[in-house]
Image 1 (tube, rainbow, N blue to C red):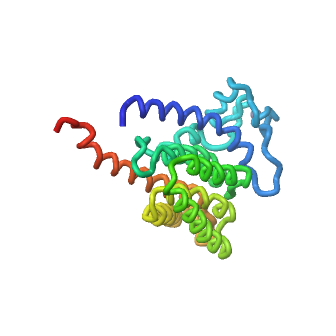
Image 2: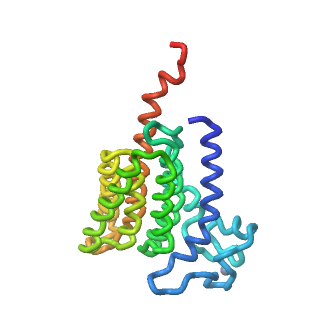
Image 3: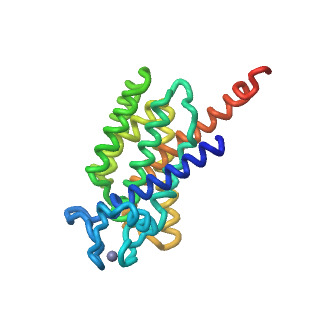
Length: 255
Ligand SMILES: [Zn+2]
């Protein structure tokens, strides 16, 4: 991975995170409550601040009165989901559709994850475009994996549907097509690996919360972030592995 690639990714992550902050602050409200369009202290608009105020709001405080608002300072900019895809050159047979979809899911996923962590819900207004956009981006790519992506989207959604019937969130069901399709575009092994990684991360985090007394057996945890991070981390690891196995032949053409 070149320095230029890393720098571009860092700048893109910072810009996208700052752009997403008003969306996260506005939508981080319990179900049934009106959107948070203004600061609770000074009533300054938080939904559509001017570009200058937008940058000031990246500190996690109201741009007018400095009241703490939305996620922690720089959390949307530095979320690991944004950087977990290791910016791979398109690896055959996945083609360019897979990296672009990874970036789409990382960008939408960061916004969704921060809302889920704040209020334990994944709003339809964000999950549905995330899933639809993922399917459209994959459909615009090479053929061959599309059928498997659609089948995987259906399979993963069915799994989360069953889990929702026994108490998991319905927001996770609406996010499942995006996660399933992206993983399915690569392989069935990626579907199993990515979904399992999500559950493993959630189990690890829950155990840590229980052991540190920050949660009890009855606490609810936001599953969306682990679901997304599991899929992106698995694909990121796969892409890094495929890059390292391709490197010796591509970097030494004469040997
Ligand atoms: Zn204010």
